[in-house]
Each structure stands twice: as structure tokens, then as C-alpha cells.
Length: 438
Ligand code: SAM
Image 1 (cartoon, rainbow, N blue to C red):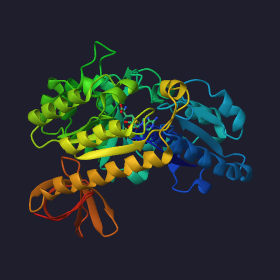
Image 2 (tube, rainbow, N blue to C red; image 1 turned 180 degrees about the horizontal axis):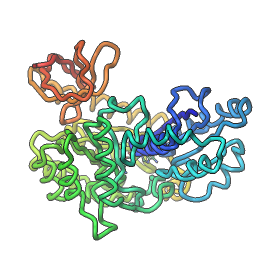
Image 3 (cartoon, rainbow, N blue to C red; image 1 turned 180 degrees about the vertical axis):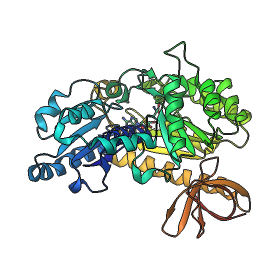
């Protein structure tokens, strides 16, 4: 029996799909890259912007003929399109979907498959797989020993109601996971060859705030660092208001924790920030970046920006443009505002920046960021940096520096999972080239 998973959206969805895959592997299913050969198809969806939601509907419609051809096919719709409440409207609209799962929860699918005896795997084979890894999280066979970088959710949901954001509605309130579960999942990933783990949360630095008995994120990083065989640890996404000095010092002092911080500013204008209900000003963000840079030498900082938020005037946009020009951050993930159903901004604030103008602002920031990134990368020219290699892309090995820069190297050796010094010989805005310095 085979399964196929289609994943759209953020790293959290990638991690959620990994859990579904693991649960299916436990049941004895095998991964298939082709949906038309699968007995179970999982669509793990994102709705953070309208474009992502449209993609999910498109994909869902494309499955109808497969279901017509094979009525035994199980179709599982999962993720933020489904949300945490019973998706009555989706059940009515897509009667050929067999099972709906909320984000991060493979249980409804697994329960359905376990009920159906004809789908039960041969007991012997299942036991062999379980013996292979006496742990919770089983990677699909194709990834075992090959997947270098894995994700682990540490906080589910989000309770910070940014006015534009649909995530709290679809992923529910903030819930930290028990540290033991996280650590055992990490150990099982490492036992299967994973060398780098990224801890995930919508506001990851709030880890443990809802559970007084749990460590905070700095404490969790200390415990993660003790896992033998794990080379690198990252975490995302941070919120400016929750980045404590204790956390920054943990990043600076724990050698396995990489000097890279993802901390979205979203806008550089105070009125827009207040309308977004982000809870800080541009000046506070500026000071935060200074603090991050002072405490973590050589750190790289990534941010997220939304252009064309309701009411954003050109002058207000310029404040964002100027803030990014001044701070020269390593990465800016850019998005055009997309009103999401049920959010405060969609209900109360007219989407009054035209699409054309959103694109214009987007491109202005994109061009500026391209230059900034090129300048930052140019400093790597001639330097030797440790690169953790992930996979071969065409004839080049792809890896990342501690600061999360993409590096390509030519080599005939299998470099999967190796961390090696690389001398950088060319840099561009998106990546660098180099050669092994060993
Ligand atoms: N929780 C993180 C945070 O606090 O920023 C990231 C969540 S979201 C998956 C990733 C990014 O999508 C956000 O940082 C934001 O820039 C963007 N985003 C969220 N809602 C959006 C919307 N309605 N329109 C456009 N972009 C949006």
C-alpha cells in the first residue's frame, strides 16, 4: 500500500507532513512520489494568503478523476484549509474527500485506515519497521540516511492576534509540546541520519510560556544541544517582543545553535504596525536588531514584510523601505497583503492598496534587498566557512553555512550530511560557490 503527500506552505506544514508520513510508515505504508499510484493521498494545505488557498482548491479538484477511477482511494485533506473546527462547508463542497484533519494532527486519517482491515499491513513487515527504529518518528524509507535537515514543532497554534493573520483561527491557541516528546523525536530523527533540526513555532520564543513546568526556549536549546550526533540546531519564527537576552545568549554560547534569527518586522511604520497589532514600534525593532547583533557575533537576521496593508500610504511604505535600507538584514521574505476571511483587518479595514501598487512596493523592496544581500555575501569572498551539505542538485552539492547562506560545491564524493570547510570563490545575492578546503 502506498501513500502520497502534497505539502503547501510553511515549515510547520513540512513538519506536519513528516508526522503523517511517519504514522503511515508505522502502519506499513510506503511513500510514492506519484499520486496516481497511491492508495492514500494527503493534501496538506496552507491558507496564509489567497494564492495558497487557490492552489489547495486547484489540487483538490485535480484529485476528483483519480477518485472516480479508484473509489478505494483515500483522500485526506489536512492543514489550515481544514482548521481546528469541524469543516462542515468543506464536507459539503468536496464529498469525495474521505477524511479531514486539523493542522498537526494525523489521528483522523490513521483512525480511518486502522478501522479498515483490508488496508492493514502484514503484521510481520510492520514489526520489522518498528524494530528498525525503536522510536516515535519514522522517516519515509527514501529519506532515511538521506534527510539532513529536519523540523520539529515545539509550539502549536498561536494566541497573538495580528490583525491580518488567519493562523490563530486555523491552528488554534498556543500549546507548547512536552520537552520529552520533542527530545525523543529529535533523537529518533538523529538516529535516522538527520544532522540539523529546526524547532518550529509561530512565536517559537514563547515556548513553555503556557506550561510553567516546561523549560523556556533557551532551556530547551541546552537540552537539545546534549543530543549526540546532532550537529546543528535552529529555531523559527521569533516575535520581536519575546526575544530575551537569555535566549540570545544561549544562541551565542551553545556551539550547536546556529547564529541565525528569523524575526519578522512586517512593516517599518508605527501606525501600520499598530494597525497590524504587532505590539512594537520601528524604533523598538531597530534596537532589537542592535541587541541581537551585539550579543551574537556574526549573526544573520531574516525578517518578513507585508506590503500594501490596508491604509498603507506611500509615505508609510517608505518608512519600511528606509528601515530595511538602514538595518541591512540578511533576508527579507516579502508578501503582498491578502485579506483573509475572519481576520480583524479583513472585517474592519478596506483592502485599499491596489494590486498594481502592492506589486510596485514589493518589487522596490525586492530590488533593494537583492543589493543588500549581494553586499553581505560579497564579504564571504575568499573566506573558508563550515558548510553542512544536504543534497546534490544537478552536478553541485548544496549546503548551508551556520548563518543559513546557500553554498554550492562541485564534488564527486557523497557529501550528504557532512559538515566541511568550504572556501568561497563566488558570491551572488541568493547563493555562493566554493570548493572543499579539505
Ligand atoms: N508567526 C510568524 C509571524 O509572527 O510573523 C509567521 C507566520 S506566517 C506563516 C509567515 C508570514 O506570512 C508572516 O510573517 C507574514 O509576513 C505573512 N502573512 C501572514 N498573513 C498574511 C496576509 N494576510 N497577507 C500577506 N502576508 C501574510
